[in-house]
Length: 373
Image (cartoon, rainbow, N blue to C red; front, side, top):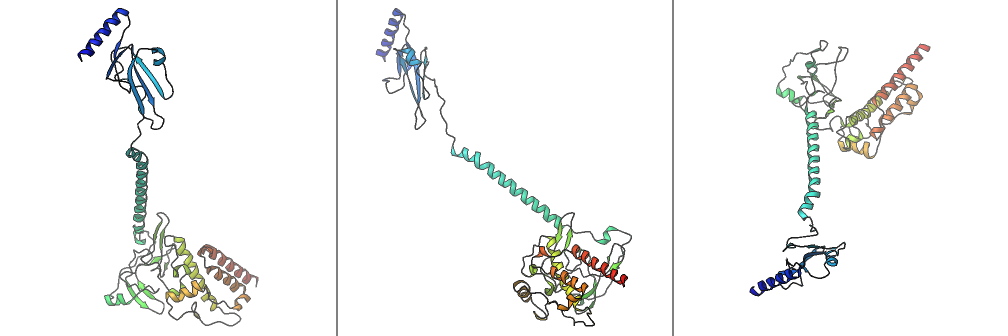
């Protein structure tokens, strides 16, 4: 260390004698034998390695060709010179290339996707809950409207619990009084006042038409639909009712239970069977056929679901239509309506409005024929 200080002092004395200034500089690199050096300028050179993109840095002193060496630069290398003691110690030229860590990449790319999926699931869940809550809202009863034209019945009856349980629904559902309700699921049936081959008569609140006329109806298995809130109440089991009149999509359980239109299409199928029964009992040329239920010659007296499914869905059979119907203009038109109510594809069947318009046209033509006569 003493020798080095003597050498630096001697160099300073020589420098003052020749007017050439020398500087003490930091020395780092393959050509440095010590950590410091003395020269006419201090320098820093940096080079970006091609493969690794790492920066190779060298610090030291220049004594010859200062201008050429201080001004040598390219796209991947550069040099910086300074003229103060140790001025090159903390100088850098290129900013280091920092690769983003894997965690940062995951946060930037994956996190937004995860948040979006969670938001989408929450939105779908809230939408489903809103739909469910709207479906559970009960429809108003007729008595709740407080209209002057609505006729109310007093709740009467003295049936015992055994009598009530004995009187079940007449549409084949087998549900007792305790769970049987009318179309609105709000009007409780009070008392079974009579039973017959095809059902029972119950006492409850009375259905009233828009013209204030009372009416009797079997609506215990009807589907409730509200257009305002898209409310649909199908009860606990959509496959209830008289099996003989069930549409193919009900028997093979392909019916869309969330669509009100599907239930209207099954009603059209059943209407076609009822129309067939009516036509069979129509007098043609002084002759009339005995009453027979639909599919009487294809299934047992009390058919099961499997019996009806085989006939209607698998074999795709329909009730026989006598040739004598074609000789009558009205029956021929009714026969056409009946066949178009029995299409296997529900969407291909006639709508109730189309049936109504066709029947009105038949009625008008019949009245016109009477007037002509």
